[in-house]
Image (cartoon, rainbow, N blue to C red; front, side):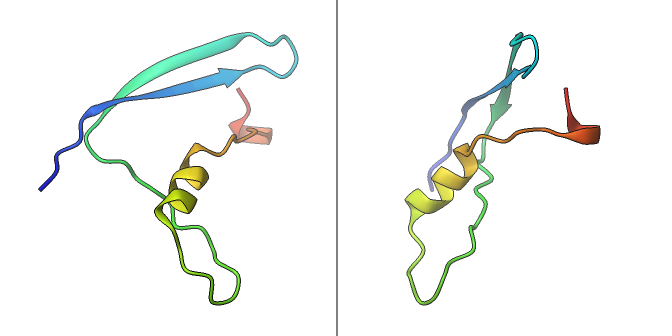
Length: 64
């Protein structure tokens, strides 16, 4: 059994004034999403990590 512990860094940048906010959250598990696959292409761990690290733009009610 492997026990993972560390910190997850979240960075947010205002698209108008470019002010940055950085927070650090402790973690013991890494909640990897499972991206949708096209056809019969096998899913790779790297695909899940890439999806987890994908940049997200917050809009409307979720905007900073």
